[in-house]
Amino acid sequence: MTDDERGLARLRTVADYQFGSGAGAALFPPDEPLEVRRTSSGRPQQVLAEDGRLVSHGIDGRFTLALAGGRRIAAGLPAPAARVVVGDESEPFVREGRNAFAKFVDEVDPGVRPDDEVLVVHESGELLGVGRAELSADAMLDFGSGMAVKVREGAGE
Image 1: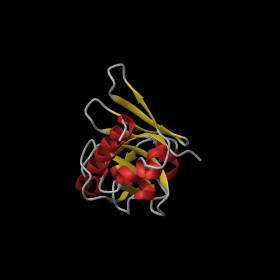
Image 2: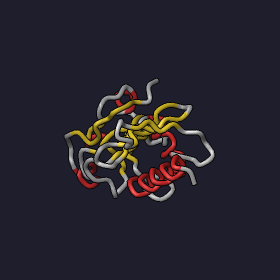
Image 3: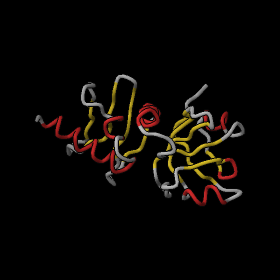
C-alpha cells in the first residue's frame, strides 16, 4: 500500500467515525482519483475530486463538508443520518446559503450535536445545503426560535 492509499484509508476512517459507517467509502471511493492538498507540514487540508472540493480537514481532525461532499454523503448514507430536514418555507433561503432556523426544522437525525457537520435537506429528500449544527437534535425540534444550522454552502437554484 502506497503512502497516498494509506492516507486515504485514514481519511475514510475519520469520515466513518464522524458521519457513520459507510461515509468514508461514499466520500472517498477507492476507485476514484482524488487529490489531497496538504499543508506545508504534510497534514491533509482539502480533498478534491472531479466534481469539486469534497471536504476540508480541520486542525481538530474533523471534516467540514463542501456541497460536493454533501451530495456524496446524501447518496451514501440512508436518511436520517447527518440530516436536518426543512420544508418549503426555508428551501429558497437555504439554497442561497442562508442559515436554517429551528422554527422551520421538521425532522433531524437524533444523533446530531452542536458543531456536527450536517446536510440540510428538503422534506422531499433534495439536498439544499451543508453546514454546522448550532443546536442538538432535540433542541432543533423543541425551540421555536434560534439558528439550527449555520449553512456554509447552499445548493443554488
